[in-house]
Image 1 (cartoon, rainbow, N blue to C red):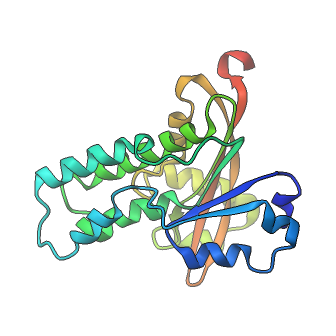
Image 2 (cartoon, rainbow, N blue to C red):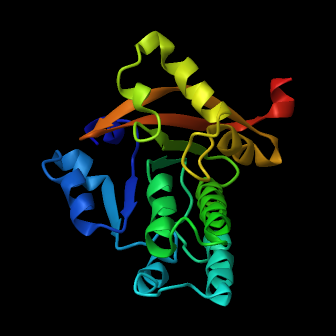
Length: 224
């Protein structure tokens, strides 16, 4: 946060968890604290409260799922957070996706549709926050050592080959294929820069993480 505050006049942190946001600003210098605002209690999927109600349901009606898919896709019209020069999503997308499977289960016939709706709604929200001139940095974990045990021990020079093969074998979290994310961010021909994947060790699990950055003001046509 101190480094960010040295580059930006205003920083806005958004999350559902108030305590987690507070931890981000505890101990900041007076300058950094004055430049940081918190937006706590914000459901960035707009459907978590509805998903919570589904935990006790033995089966989720088709009509309910249709309504949730519609709400998730229409995310930009439901949350107004203004516009920013740089918008960063830090490993949030996988958590939003996981909330679907926790609530309705992976076996529900519309679970994948709801995951895609949440993903596309989140990407649309990032685009709305960045506007025409802002930059988006999407960071997300996309596969773990649960299904790719080699991830924990593979050498650094073989990591890219391993995760590329995993994606080719469709071994990734539902809705979080990095190639599809890249394609979705390139909507309207915006130039997107992918970064090499890296490992994130989190307790007993290891995750592969990717990052995609839109280049503000440039399109694929400009690059040519």
